[in-house]
Image 1 (cartoon, rainbow, N blue to C red):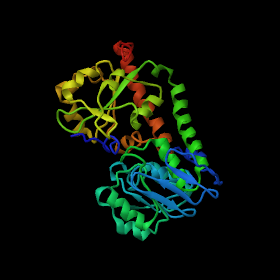
Image 2: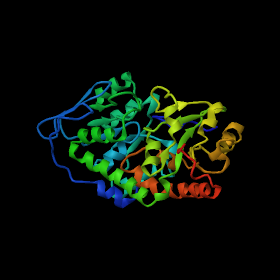
Image 3: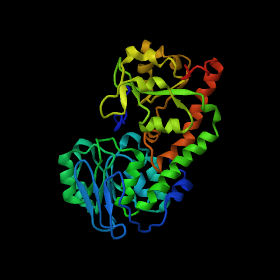
Length: 355
């Protein structure tokens, strides 16, 4: 059965030229006004970065970077700091054992691939200790207070400023840029990501009047809907499609950027021109689509579903950062084009989200 990839916030791109454009030379800057709670003095260091779990006091330029959670490794690489260690993420990894956009970026630079270690509930503290980190980056993660305290004994640790798995992607970039002594690079990285998505949207004006909802299931009879601010939804809407207004009527499940509405409420998605979702494999897809209430969703019935069983694609399309966006966009557009073409042929293309 399909599982809820990453949680909504847990779970809840990489053309070489795009990644290279992000590897900008470092220069120092003072910036005392930031929503992540950082204060910068004497150039880029020392810097103190507050989080919900404590304050990371970074005295000098970090050289040995370790990352936990999602997105931190990619941003560090884009800033010119290949981590010495990263939390393993086997679900979306390729044959190399690494997430493909990370493998491609690091090997293109000619750097040594980071050591991977177990994360999540059972972080391999011994492996991190052996890496001798200067800083540990975990602003989009689910580390606990106890884990944070242990990690902070090893190196200054940048955690999330609010709830676990709740840091906005642009805020994550801002925090990591400050931690690595390049606060002035954050805006450039954000602009590059937004520009890449905007350029794709300009090439698809036909998306403008197409509504969508992004759903998931975590067991028989279940149905969840990701909300507008969730990263995978934001990526799709940044490509020009419109979130079905009904999504905003669903009550969020606390700390998830999604709403569990149950399959009995699937009919409420009847105005969604397209439905986006994901599957862990072909078997789980068959199981989900065999449910009558799910199959009766208009977008599912007419085949205007954008979905993938490729775990690397599912991972990349679920997180916005400097490496995933260029890697995934050109893979995403043909899937969306196919669904929009089916919508046009069905004659239902004018209905979604407009009533």
